Image (cartoon, rainbow over all chains, first blue to last red; front, side, top):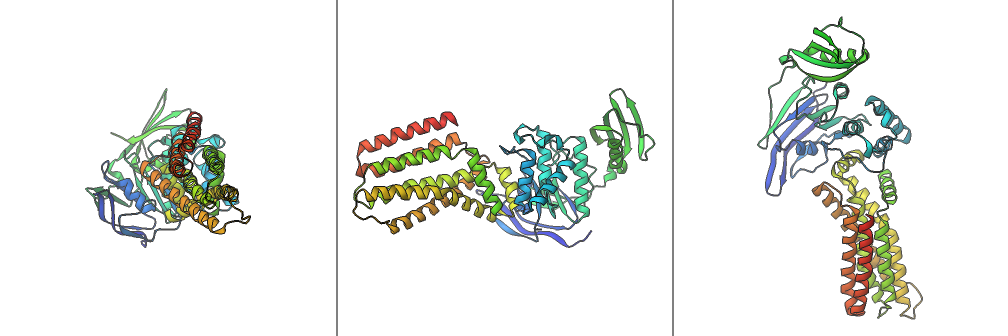
Length: 275
Length: 202
C-alpha cells in the first residue's frame, strides 16, 4: 500500500447562494486507503464527495492528482428509462471508452458479481429498489477505478450484497484504489478503514481511529437450509433454531464466517454488533 | 465522446419527444411562408426567431432529459463535466441541423415568391446558421442548469406546450407588424391546438 497522494485537494469551498456549505477544506488521500466520511445531515458530505469525484465544480480551491478512472455511486439512483440492466451497463462501459468487447466483458463481470443475472433483460424501471442499488454500485466498477466515491452505498443493499460490496471495497483498496465513502447508518462497522474524516460546521477534521475490535463480537442472523459449519474458527456461540441460525462470532472472524455461511448455502438476514 | 453523441441522439429519437416540437415548428414555418412576406429578404427575418427557439428547444430536450444522479454518473463515465457538456452541445447542434435546413427552405420559398432573383441568399443562410448554433447553445445551457438545479428533467408534457407558446409569442410579435391581427390569431389557434395535443398525449 503506497503512501503517495492519489487525491489531493486544497482550499476547497462550496457556496450555495450566500451560504458556504464548507470552505478551506484540505484533503490528502494516499493510494489504497479506505476513508470514511461522516457528519450530520446537511453537513455537506455528499457535496464534498461530488467535488472530489469531479461531478461538481467547487466555488473555491483546487483538486489535484484525481485519477483518470473514477467510480461514483450517487446516494439516489433513479431508473434510466427505456433500458435493460445489461443495456445500461454496456452503454456506460462504452461511455468509459471501453471497446465493444471490453464493455461486454466488463458488464458480464459486474452482473455476475452483483447477482444481477436474473435481471439482465428486465427494464431498469421494473427493478426493485435493492436491485437498482446493485446496478448503481455495479456501474461504478465497470472499469476498475483508481478512485471510488460511494455515497451511502449500503442504504438498500441486503446482507449478502453488503458483504459483496464490502469485499469489493477491500479488493479495490488492495489494488491501490482510494475508496471514499459515507455510511449514514454506519451499517458496516466491519469495514477496516484507514482514515475517518468528519465534516461538521463546514470544517473537515480527522476522527480518532476506531479499532474494529471495539465491538468484540458480531451477531450473524442466517436463514435458509444450509449445512452446519460450527467447527469453523472464530465462533463464540452457534444456535440453530427453526427459522435459521444465529451465530455469535469474534469481530475479526465475521467476514470469513459470512463467506463460509454463504458457501454452505445459508442466506444472510442481518449482521450487527452483538449487544 | 462520439459514443455519447450517438447514444444521446439515438435515445432522443427513440423517446419520441422530438415529434411535437418538430410538428409545431413545421406548422410555424408553413404559416410564416404562407404569409407571403414583403419585402423579399424579410422572410429570413421572420423565420430566424422560430429557428432560434426551435434549436434551443432541441438543445433543451437533449440536456434536460436526464435526472441529476444519472447525469452525474454519465459525467464521471465520460471523463468530466466539460467533455460531457461539449458532447451534449454537439448533440444539440446535430439535432438542430434538420431545423436549420427546414428554416432555410421556408425562408427561400418566402423570399423567392416575392423576388425575381432565383439564387440562394447566402448572407441569410449564414445568418441562420449562426442563429441555429446560438439557439442550440442557449438550449444546452438552460437544460443543464435546469437539470443540475432542479434534479429532475422537465416532462415533455410541460416543456412542449411551453416552448410552443414561446414560439407563438415571438412569431406573433413579428407578425403584428406585417400581417396584422388575423395572422397572430391564426398562429395562436394553431399552436394552442398543438399544445393541447401535446399535453394530452404526454
